[in-house]
Image 1 (cartoon, rainbow, N blue to C red):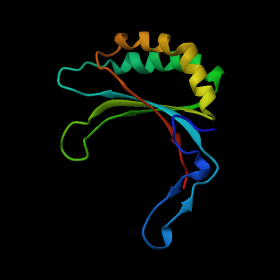
Image 2: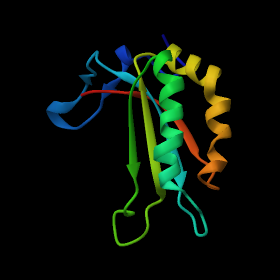
Image 3: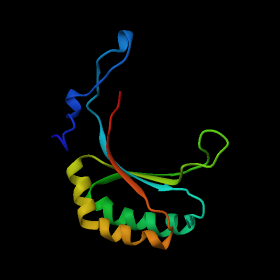
Image 4: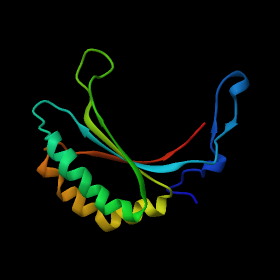
Length: 133
C-alpha cells in the first residue's frame, strides 16, 4: 500500500557509494507517530504530569487500537553545549498505517485536548515508516 505518493517499502533502496549501492530494505518494519515538543525560551513542560497522566491516557486509548510500543525521550543537548531543540519526544509504534490512522481518528482529539495540562509548547507531529537495514 502506498501513502501520499511515497513509494512502498518494496521499492525503497539505500543509495551509497561502492559496494553498498542499492541495498533493499528488509521486510520487518513498523509505522511510527513521533510527537516532538519544541523547547523555546519561556516554554513550560510539566514532566511529572506528562509521565503520570498523559502517557497512561495515550496508552489506555491507543493500545487496544494496535499500539505496540511507546518510547519517551527527554532532550538533554543540541549535540554541543546548547539546549536541546526538543524538550520531549514521544514515539508510538504500530504494525500498520491503518491501525495508526484509526487510533488517531478515534482518540487524537482527546489526547491533544490534554496537552495544555502539561505544556504550552505546540508539538510537531510526524508519521513515519520505520525501515530496518
